Amino acid sequence: MNLRIKLFTAFLGLVIIPLFVLGIITFFVTFNSIEKKYSQQAEYSLKAIGYSIKNVFQEMDNVTDNGIAKGVFQAALSAKDPDTQDLTATTQLELNANQRNFRSLLYSHPAIDYAFLYNIHGGRESNVIAIFNKENFETLPYEKFKEHPLYTEVMALNGQPKWIAPHEYPELTGSDNVFTQIRLIKELSNLERVGVLVVQIKNWEFEKIFQNLKLGSQMRDTRFMLVNDKGLILYDYQSELDGQQIGAYLLKDWELGEGYRSFKGKFNGKESVVSIYKLQDYPWSLVSVTSWSYLSQEVTTFAKWFVAIICVCVLTAMLFNFIFINRITGTIGVIVRFMRKVESGDLNARVDEKGDDELLLLQKGFNNQMDKINELFDQVKREQLQKANAELRVLQAQIKPHFLFNTLESINVLAVQNEGRKVSEMVLRLASILRISIQDKEEIKLSLEVEHLRSYLEIQKFRFDELFEYVIDIPDEMKNCLLLKLTLQPLVENSIQHGFEGIDYKGRITVTGRMEQDRILLRIEDNGIGMTNEQLANIQYADMDDPAYRSLAPYPSHERRGLGLRSVYDRLRYQYGSRYGLFICSQPGYGTTIQCVIPRYGAGDFDEIKSVAG
Image 1 (cartoon, rainbow, N blue to C red):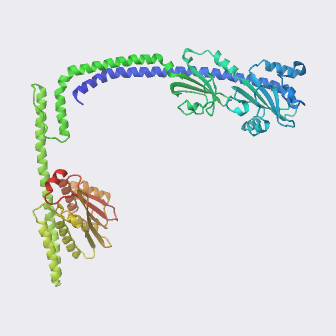
Image 2 (image 1 turned 180 degrees about the vertical axis):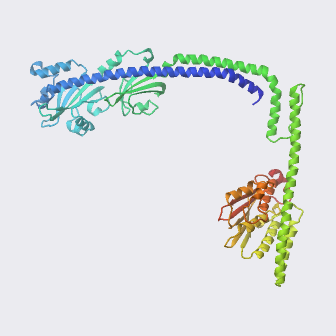
């Protein structure tokens, strides 16, 4: 982050952002306060509406209780002529005293729309007895009503009233917006079940409840609905959503709950505050929906002014930054750009030195630092090259004393046994090894490396005849490729000295190779004792000069403990880059697989591949 941005950020962080945060906090506190206060007001309103609805139902329950207590319904069920029991058609003189009193009670409740009885015992042409007639309404036959789930529920209530809202069971109540009471009728003398009373009331009483409710100014844009537990809208005060599922308009899933709850969400695509109050003793909930834009008009206006002021402050800060800070930060920005070039790998980047103030000292310091860094890089390269060459010489020096001594001792044994042919073969193998190892070339053809490896393996196989066997499968088209000499032999030597130590079966070494587009893969596999994860980590990550590395003993043998393997690992990485080198996979008891990955090129391609790898 340059100085210009820092200064601008400081202005934002110390002035603009605190002001912005304060405004945001005030904004959200106000919004939450509006939502909370409206939620409380909606709760009071919904509870008042619920109380009034409950009173309507209780009043109608009292009416039907009066008819049951006076035996009006029982008399209608036992009458010889059921058609004469219609209180709307019968003259006042034809009624008994109880019927006249009940008729007067019914007429005092003009909201009653329809009333009839089901005769449980039957015995007549029709089991339906009209009490309060209604035109253009066909009553559900008693036989079908008995099959309806409501029949079982009404029987289980044993005389307690069951209320049904509009649109819940249209096959029983019709398509009008009426609330229906269903209850069992018993004979007063012996409590025998004799019939079922069905009374429908119009929604006039509910409209009066909402009309008479004194709504506050914050609830003028409010929609009231009655919804059952399945999410069906039973009654909409605005008469628009009757009979529809509330889930089609409410993005939040309709959930059953007790008591009162309120939340802000989308309703019919508009941000709204939705309040829900579960009615006691009824499977319905009162729902109020108020547009949030209506509630938050004043706060929104305040927010617009606040955003406008913040924008003016930001523009002022940008103008200050451009006029006063740009002069100072321009030169620093140039130096930063050159530093980024250095970060991307361009160590020859230099800043033009100009000016006569402290910025000139900064430019000179940058250029001097880059000169020092280049000198250090050159020194590190020379030291790394010297280290790699020293390790190679150490490796070659260690091969000669141990290997030569053991090989010559084996040749002497053959000579004592008069095995002239084997002596000749051993001498030729040893000569081949020495000829290749003492060459001044750092890289040799793969064919020579394979010849060196085969000679080494034949000599070792003579020394340890029953210890192992080997297979070398290198395609001929690979043998002209170049690689660092003494690459394969140390890897195979590692398998013989460490992988086969202490085994009670015959070891096997397999050397294979294959070519890809721009690289060759050489794989050395053995069926030896394998290595643990800790031993693999020691080989791949240890520092050869670290005393802690030299103190580790992954294998019992003390002869060149991991030196050859680690030397090959480092030489390949240094020579060809991090994309190439050794990749080791091993598990105790399952042997070891070493894959050597090197770039594919032959004689004459060295400069090209060197530039790609480096």
